[in-house]
Length: 98
Image (cartoon, rainbow, N blue to C red; front, side, top):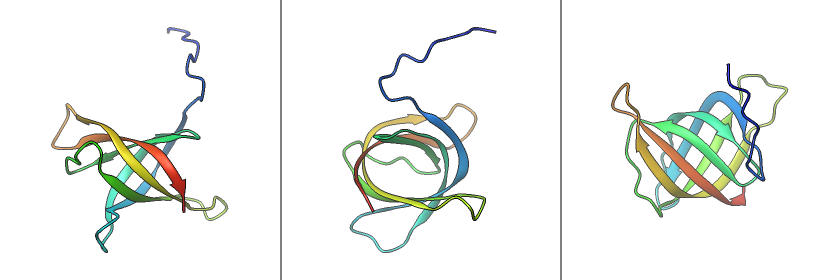
């Protein structure tokens, strides 16, 4: 319908896979759903609100074995409630690859 040109300096890539995440001070991972990723950030949906500024570890779990898993340490920079339920979109800035 609309042909919007990508204006970001670092384009995002849509992904649809599981993401495991945890606070760096915790031992147990929780599950969410990844939405997109770029070279410096990630967006995923979680069933809990995570405070902006929190440092978390993430692991993207690809659905095909030919794609390697991705691990990173991110800082939560934005949290928005999802309109269709009790979930939250979590945007994070990648601080380090793991």
